[in-house]
Amino acid sequence: MRHFQLMRYSTLSQSWFSNLRGDLLAGIVVALALIPEAIAFSIIAGVDPKVGLYASFCIAVVIAFTGGRPGMISAATGAMALLMVDLVKDHGLQYLLAATLLTGVIQIVLGLLKVGNLMRFVSKAVMTGFVNALAILIFLAQLPELNLKLDGVSWITYAMVAGGLAIIYLLPRVTKAVPSPLVCIVVMTVLAVVMNLEVRRVGDLGQLPDTLPVFLWPQVPLNLETLAIIFPVSISLAVVGLLESLMTAQIVDELTDTPSEKNREARGQGIANIVAGMFGGMAGCAMIGQSVINVKSGGRTRLSTLTAGVVLLLLLLLLNDQVALIPMPALVAVMIMVSIGTFSWASIKNLAVHPSTTSMVMLATVVTVVWTHNLALGVGAGVLLASLFFARKVAQVIRVTSELDADTRTYTVRGQVFFVSADTFTSAFDFKEAIDKVIIDVSHAHFWDLTAVGALDKVVLKFRREGSGVEIIGMNEASATLVNKLAIHDKPSALERMLDH
Image (tube, rainbow, N blue to C red):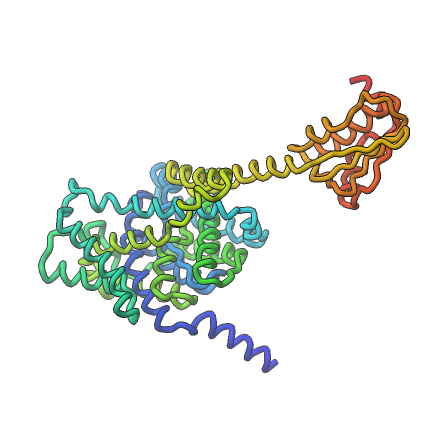
């Protein structure tokens, strides 16, 4: 018992307190970066800024305890906000809160069904495309803040962004004692206040809340009509939220060279969204931008995620007026750093090295995500294309050879027989050859589906129609189980049925 307690304490210490200084500083940086993002996403969804800010606080704090990927940041996101627009416009905030609760329930169910295991079907090319697309979207999201037609944007804005990037990239060459993005935000804020520079501030985006979130059960009728309204939105939010979270977890896995629990992450996202919905927040998920900021600023454990959420609330409650003074160019500089660090620059060079199909999958993922601003569509397109290319490649591997011995011809089949390769398999046999007996050796083959079994039926029955006896040898157990269940060539009157057709 004592040994178990020691192990548990060691695991707890490793998950929370093994990187105190790095986690605390990284959490502060992330909290500052979360504020403008949460406000912007609230505006996209058509709700008050406090809805996004409260959601970011609740989700970050809860996921620190329930999530499966230490060091990953979850909060209100743009991908989720886009899915809420019509619901808020047509039915209002209360229905959004109800949809957020249902989203959490669906995600918990999907987590219990081990949806995280599906991540193994996402190829490296799709992952690279996902990362590159997000990097592009993060960069594009900063462009409105650099629009000279916008009030408060001038050459000073560009100078501050350049200065911020200089601090971010040059300071680590001198010292890594403090995260350079945090120094960038502090220095640029002091300069903007002391010199009274005419630049856009965080406060210009919307009024910051100055009170704690309160428990708020959605004021909607509990009936089937309400369910019919929120269910389609909740399903979309649950799927997109889990997809972005699990993909981001995989990216953080690679950045930190540590594993994560994908199914626990799915359940944790659900719990976090339920809590957010009960305290007046919108649904959210993992944020690749803030997660990269956290990792690059030194965050590694659950403490960094908890710190981000707690500091976010403290900033809003205790330093409301000071936070409103943070210049947007400083945060733009941080997000540009994130987009540059997120993008896989090696993938450009690899276009000339990798197989064309791999490059096509990566580019298709990027183009679809950037064009639609929908991560689920982009990843879905990439996975579908990768699957088609894989099926085509496997289908080309099948090979059928034959040998004649007296009045017996033996066909040897090598490869995978399924819906793509079935025609190749069938066309490899000579049905017009006058022969007494045909042996089909499938010792080096596997039959995968109904189409493959149908192709075998076709071959056997065609030979029998021509008067040849057929024997199948070497079938493995899995293939035999499928063939015995679905095949008709060994059933009574099978040949007659074929002749009728």
